[in-house]
Length: 406
Image (cartoon, rainbow, N blue to C red):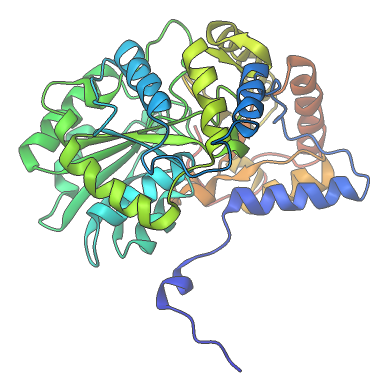
């Protein structure tokens, strides 16, 4: 029997990052030593202890409230007030989800219908566009140019807004660029959103990873923005709990009621003991490797500096210093290959894995995305491999149309 599939499936492909991870896994299984710069400190002990205690409790195998454990929602509300200057009622304005991605998807299904337009940054996180399309929406790319540091062109934002625009989707700090939206730009975004009456969803998965004395600002904390902003956060990153699948969305009660409705029908609730582990780490502020968050950021700063310094020393490579997240986005266009081709070359020749910049949008062509989660020793080893592999290709000998060199 030949299966008939929904039209929406034809618009989807495998996520680029997942495809690379699968390839790396296979190469490692064959005995190849691959560096992906992705090693983090262990999940906090208090998370595992709290999860074990919940599993052994009388209610550990039961469904929780569809919105999440009341105690976890209270801890999230306290965290939002303290760290993000957002006041959210834990009973009506917070929903605990299966990671940040489910929070984003439930929000899409609540707000976006067939033909509705969603504005997204270009380059942008690879998961955004498929979720928009699954909801029936039409992604509208806002180009962010390398020569402007991949800054969102706030002065042109309104020109992308039409009567069909339902939502502006942002990632702050940014994946893959590693930049943070400035307070001035956030204020301008807020003014535009209010004046044009659109909603904004901000993925703040990397909110703790801000460097050089910078401070993360949540768009929802600005005057007039809580009622039209969905703030999405997670324990996946700073706590190294990605596999626990716990995130949350915070928004005004009328909006959150609709998101909660989608969430309840789709997934019922996140795993009870995963929620218990998340509650423990948020309450105590203990991140990966059982370290305080400030110490983790200090370590990542050193790792970032080692990565940027090493890459910038390679002839033909330009690499800006990210102000947030844990990504670098170097330009390798001078080597005359597409971003897909250069990533495959580096994987096979240097045994170093990277994500092609083109996976994040047209403006990412010519770039690759690397993480800097590993310690400085591993970063130096991997960058040395990259330098050796790239030394075999003479930059500027082929005129490349891929990407914008910086």
